[in-house]
Image 1 (tube, rainbow, N blue to C red):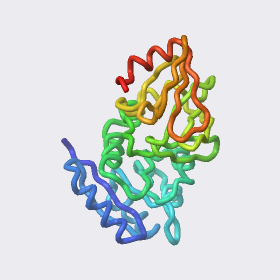
Image 2 (cartoon, helix red, strand yellow; image 1 turned 45 degrees about the horizontal axis):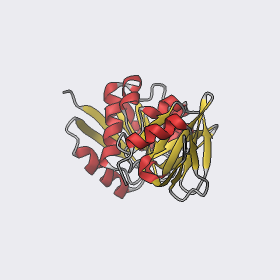
Image 3 (spheres, helix red, strand yellow; image 1 turned 180 degrees about the vertical axis):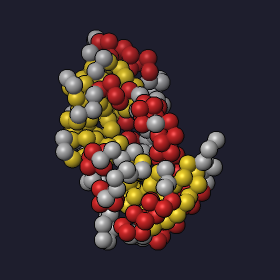
Image 4 (cartoon, rainbow, N blue to C red; image 1 turned 45 degrees about the vertical axis):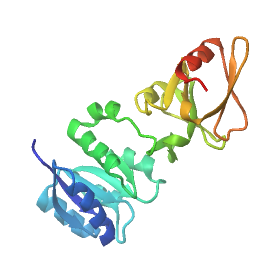
Length: 240
């Protein structure tokens, strides 16, 4: 397998060391250099021609967005940052991926897989883990939530509604069907045509004649299920 060449760009030396250590554990990766400023990064990209650049968004003198904007033909880029407020803008400039610090080996590997397979091919195959954080696209902004804190997801026309721990609801532009291939199979189940439930967060099931109510996490209001959904849930849940 041909190695993919990578450049690390971050103004914090420790952050570069940590990312380098993770990348060195990946056999298909060759690190061609590092840069700590915008000008160093531009010079390195032009001279070393890396296939993939890991860019910090906020750096003194100009960060990832400024670096890409200064290039006529920028390489594939993965943004690495401690903050999630720039997530939507990152994807609007065609970033390959967006990683939150501290970067985990599994999440880094998913970015490398996305690069190796191409965006269109890799996106459907990237399934989230319960330890990951999912990006919820909210118009022109975004918000990350822990996957394990998603209680259920409902279809909402061409959008989806995500209900999280504590009862907060997000109406987002992702389609309901997009979630089916992304969520962990061991904890999330589609129990109705427009409903996915995190079965690991069910704390109580109250059956009725032809329906049921389920309590999830600390959400104060129970989720009411119709007959078919209640039946499917009984099949999926182990006896208590």
